[in-house]
Each structure stands twice: as structure tokens, then as C-alpha cells.
Length: 124
Image (cartoon, rainbow, N blue to C red; front, side, top):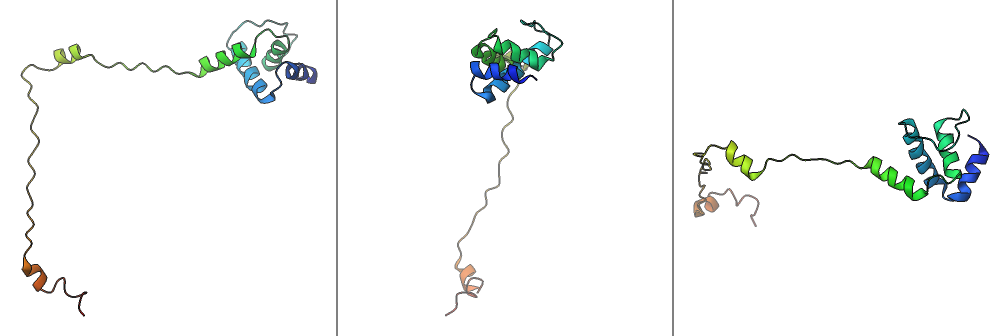
């Protein structure tokens, strides 16, 4: 990669980190078949992308939007609608009742205290 190309790009876009991200995005676009706007001159895609940035063929905002668009994922959730659920469910369906839990009773008998179970550790 020619130092002249990078120096030209830094004059246009002073943040080197953003420049790398934007040039990489443009390089990916070129690799996926996008038309180049400068002569290739037997250069590889990253160099062509930097030369395009230096020639101001694309604004940084255009490349940022392209990057954001490429990273977005749209997830379509196909949930059945209420009307479809009514068709799928039988009309005589009744939900099953929850099973009854046995009720545990605790009896507070004085026999528990007097048997010595609780008195072992609390002696004076």
C-alpha cells in the first residue's frame, strides 16, 4: 500500500481508525462486485478503496451508512395470527386443570419442645 495514498486519505479523513473501517467496508463492497470509480492500475481492493477515498468519490457518511446497512440483521418472526390459532385448535378443547397439591399442615405441639430436640444446644 503506497504511503502517498494513505497520506492523501488522512488529509481528507483525519481519524485513521475511522479511515481503516471505512476503507475496509469499501474494499468488501468492491470484492462483492461493486463498480470501482478509479482506475485499478493492477492494485488490490484495499488500495483501490483508499484511492477512492483520497479522490473523494464517496463521502465518509455514505461509507458509514453502507457499513451500518451491511451489519444490520433483520429477523422476521413468523408468528401465527389469532385467527389461524382458532382454526388450528379443536373447538371442544378445554384446558386441563392444574393438579391439586397436598396441603401440608404443621402442628405446633409443645411435645416438640419438651422432647429435648430443641433443648440440647440451649442449656444454661
